[in-house]
Image (tube, rainbow, N blue to C red; front, side, top):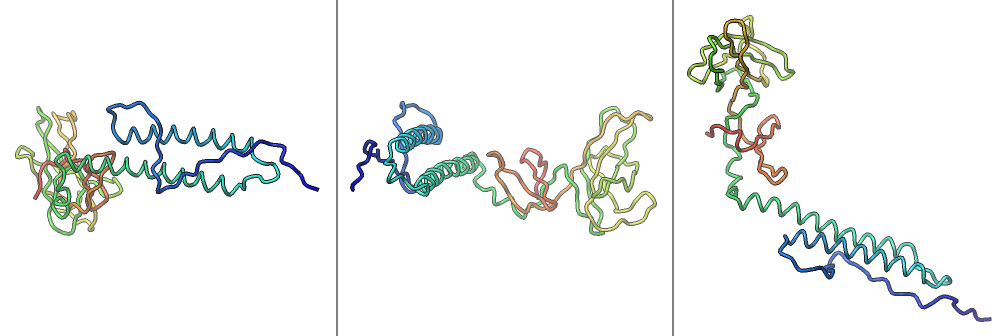
Length: 232
């Protein structure tokens, strides 16, 4: 006994592959190519779902499509979408490089002065500071890597630079490690303001973060280019 199919002829489902460009009929505009790609991928995905739903509704109940076919096609479409996102990220990197930052690699190995902590290895550290206008005295405050204060020394900051000799408040040389610096400015006993000390540190890496170049120094601190006040 033969059994005839009660349903209509199945509608073919389009197959999307990662190596095949996915297009959609969209209104021409002067938008960025990546925006056009995202618009196209969204339109194509909506079309894909509609066709897939139609196929499922009209498939032969005696020969239904395997679920693995659905999964494979969705995975292929996902791969295309992921490629679009990757292209967007690469675009932001190329954009940063094309705006006068093409030689970012030249920063690596150079020393930059910026608001940051410094490695103490037994040698004095020069700290660039700015006193608050109207101050009659200034104090250099040194903190360890845990944020604890290790010394508080009156200094003359009129030259814009002071030197820390590596000793704590008792005059004992501190252990090697990273230390931060702050200049407190006073008028009598009143604190007028504090300025984060700027020291030199070597650049170990350059990263593109949100489309902008960032310099990575020894302790992992990321510095924007406009934070750098000197290079050597």
